[in-house]
Image (tube, rainbow, N blue to C red; front, side):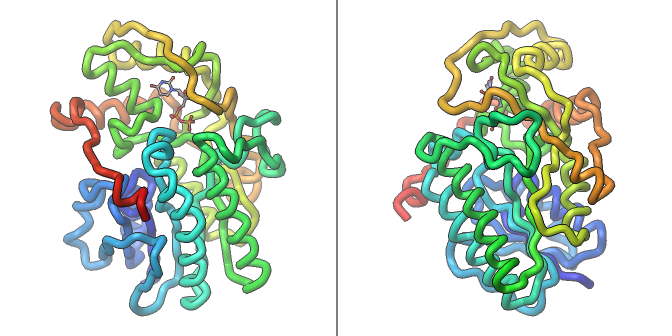
Length: 328
Ligand code: UDP
């Protein structure tokens, strides 16, 4: 049985990856420090013999007993609000956490795949974004803590690949959505759905003419699965190229939820990228991958998930105290 370590296991993508690798017959070791992750996302796996969980912060030395064949490094805050609340941990998990996991991969002779992001392209001046584009990032802006940590993550991963001959894979993840996103993390899809379910107006930031391209989680997981098993070690975009303005998207959500919520406009957050669309030619050619789930199907499933949550979740503020994490 192949053994795989998945960091960020209790998070949105991490938990879906745990499900997928458990289903594929791997022995899955999940790891998370639960700052932004939630055990509810993986508690259904606890009874299985081929799943185990460590509550551990990967910015500290990481040790796992016995052999490891693969490591997936998916631990990181992933919403602009989280970067503001936990900026130092965001930097540390991308930088120090990645260093620890590369070290572990070297000792275990494991193949490691790291989760990078379309944010390495910053507010892109090239559209759609190809892997060759170097990006346009504000190092000292609010998103800088995430963007630069992920850029460092790519650099150190390539350094381990070239210098230590480690088997490495780098996925650049574009906006991905689906069940288990955090309802109150401020990202646009849970924000709009939460607002519709509470009967509030939908808050569009700026004029709403900025664009995003949303990928359903099952497609994203399939892309990552294929990349891990490929022999391609340069970064690869995984996302859905179907682009939409945030204003049109808000209207789609009003239709989907069958509510007649108003749309209100609020200030655009600093450095909010104006446009984002992945060029996925490489993923098509190298992995034979392209997204299959339409936004209509994916949003329906996502809406059904949020609707099924206990009603009090809709009104829950995130009361977590981040003071300790920020001090470290
Ligand atoms: N956005 C919005 N209203 C919200 C939350 C987000 O209009 O309540 C916008 C945000 O300004 C951005 C887009 O939706 O242009 C996607 O934001 P998100 O935080 O989901 O991810 P990003 O792609 O910016 O990292």
